Image (cartoon, rainbow, N blue to C red; front, side, top):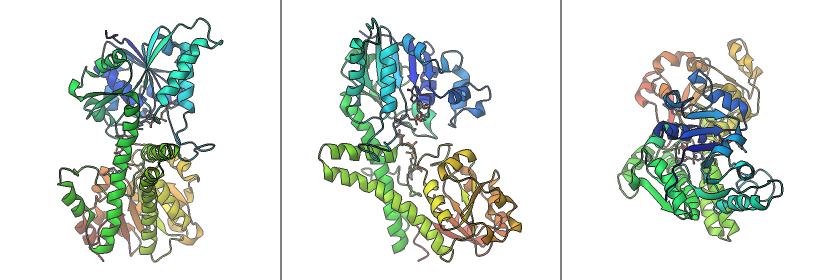
Length: 480
Ligand code: NAD
Ligand code: UGA
C-alpha cells in the first residue's frame, strides 16, 4: 500500500531546502509544502515580495516561487505546528565539519541533525516518514531512528503514539543550476528499509521524473553514495588541476589535454575544467567525512588516498597566489590588484570555501590592496570570509601613495572601477560579464606593466595582447 503524501514539512530553508521544496511544490500542486527554519531573517527573505531579495540566488528560482508561494508553498518559523501536521518530514539542515572535539576538522557536526530528530520526536503525530535530505555520514539514519524510537519511552513526551520510517534521499543539485538539476535530475536515490515508505517518496518524484531514474538501495548505500559522488567529482578537479601545473611546466595546454582525455567515453568530458580549485560548502567537508569514516574503520590507506584530493586543492590555491606574486616582481606590497569574482562558482552568491578566500588572504598577507567585485556576493559576506573590515580609503586611492596602505581590500559595485591604478587583475569566478570585458577600453586604467591572471580560462588571449596586457592563463605552458 502506498500512503499518498498530502503535507510535507522541510526543516532547513537553506541552499537545498529552499529550491528543493519549491520545485516539489511546483510539480505537485496537491501537496502542501511547509519549509521551516530557526533563522527568522532567512524566512523573512524567502517571504519577501521583492523576489530579487530571496536569500539565495539561483537562476529561475524566482519564477518557481512566484508560481507557488502562498498557494501550496509556505516559508515560516512555525516548526512545531508544521512537524505536527506533516506526513513526510525532510531534514535539510547544515552538516558542517566539526570544529572541536573528537574528529574535529574531519567528522561532520551532527548537532543540527540531532536537534531536528528530537523536534520531530517531540511534535510528530501519527505516522511520519522522516527523510534525510542533508548529506550525512554513513549510518546516521540509525542515530535518527534511535532518537525517534527513544521518544516513545521519553517521560517528557506524554502519550506519544507516533510511528516513523526513516529514508535517505540525498540531494545531488549543484548551486547555480539548482532548478534545472531538480527538474531534470540524472537520478533520484532513495535508500530505506520500508518499501512502502520508499514508494510514498517515489510517488512524489514520479510527478515529473521518469520511474527509470528513481533508484532504490539500502539505506547505508544511499548515504555512502552521496559522499562518494562528491568525492569522485572533487577528485576529477584535483586531478585536472595537478595536470594544469604540469602543463605550465612542460609547454602543454590543460584545455587540450582535457579535450583529448575527455573524448574517451570511459573518462567523459565533464568536470575537467581547470580552475583556482574547488570550493563550495560540500566537496571538502564530504571528502573529509569519508576520510574520517575510513580512519574510523581502520582503513588508513583509503583515508590517505582521499585526503590527497583536499591537500592538492589547497596547494593549488597557494600555487596561484605565488605565481601572481612572482609575475609582479616578487613583491605585492602596496600594489593594487583587481579581484574579479568572489563566489565559489558562477551563478551563485555562495562563497563557502571559495578559492577566492584563500587567494585573497594570501595576496593581502603579501601586502596587496585588493579591489574586489562580484555581481551577486554581498560585501558583508566578503568581510566575514576575509575576517577583515574593508578599507574605504582605497576608493579615494589615486591621491594616496601606494605604500601608505598595505594588505587591505574594498568592494566596488562596478567592475570597471577595480582596474583603476591596478597592476593586475585576477579572474577567480567565471561570471559571464567578465568573459565579455572589452580589454582595450580598460587597459589604460591600469599601471604598466599590467597583468591579467585568468584562473577560469575565459579570456581571449589575442584581445588581451592587442590591448597591451600580459596574460597568465591557468594550465597554459605556451609562454615557457
Ligand atoms: P544551509 O546552511 O544553507 O541551510 C541549512 C538551514 O538549516 C539553515 O538556514 C539553518 O538555520 C537551518 N537549521 C539548522 N538547524 C535547524 C533546526 N533545528 N530547525 C530548523 N532549522 C534549522 O545548508 P545547505 O547548503 O542547504 O545544506 C544542507 C544540507 O544539504 C547539508 O548537509 C549539505 O551537505 C547538503 N547538500 C548541500 C548542497 C548545496 O549545494 N548547498 C547540495 C547537496 C546537498
Ligand atoms: C557539488 C556537486 O556537483 C553536486 O552534485 C552536489 O549535490 C553538491 O556539490 C553538494 O553536495 O553540495 P556545487 O558544489 O554546488 O555542487 O557545484 P559544482 O558545480 O560541483 O562546483 C564545485 C566546485 O568545483 C566549484 O568551485 C567549481 O568552480 C569547481 N569546478 C567544477 C571546477 O573547478 N572544475 C570543473 O570542471 C567543475
